[in-house]
Structures are given as structure tokens and as C-alpha cells.
Length: 87
Image 1 (cartoon, rainbow, N blue to C red):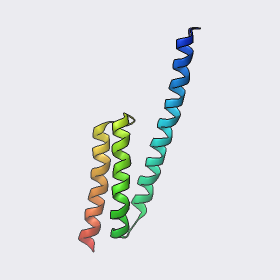
Image 2 (image 1 turned 90 degrees about the vertical axis):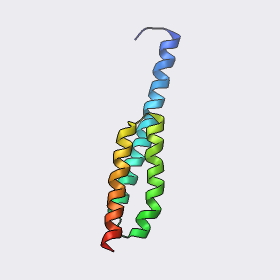
Image 3 (image 1 turned 180 degrees about the vertical axis):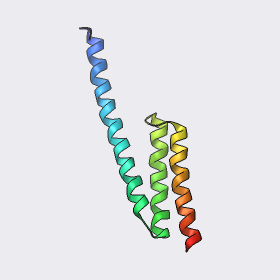
Image 4 (image 1 turned 60 degrees about the vertical axis):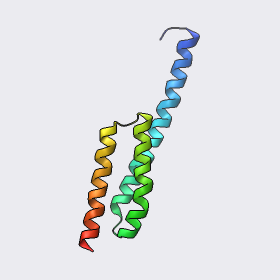
């Protein structure tokens, strides 16, 4: 690493962003995991909107690719539709 003020600042900023991105990503992954364990369609539908919003925010911030966000939401929607069909 070069011994310049700007380079040192960039390293500090990158560390902050990395920690923040890891937090958002991990929180969303935990929310998806918790959502997948739900078996009641009403509870699933309520939580689905907040989880979909979290996934969209990850894509907007560039933490995950927009296609990955779409794939995640699609899988959750398929699970929701199976619950409705089974009920």
C-alpha cells in the first residue's frame, strides 16, 4: 500500500463498506432462511414482502446482482404459490 493520505483513507472507507455490506447480506440471508421455515401461508405472505424488499435493497446497493435478486424472489414466490395450492 502506498503511503499517501488518500490511499489510507480509501482503505478505511473500503473496510467500512465491506463491513456494512456483510451486515446487510447476512441479515438478508438470515431473513430468507427464517422465511423458508414458515409453514403457514398467512405468516409467509406477511414476511415475504419485507424479505423481498431487503433483497431489492441488496441489488440496488450492488451487494448482489439484480438477476440473483430476481432468482431469490422467484424461488420464494414459487414456495408461496405451492402453499396456496396445497391449502
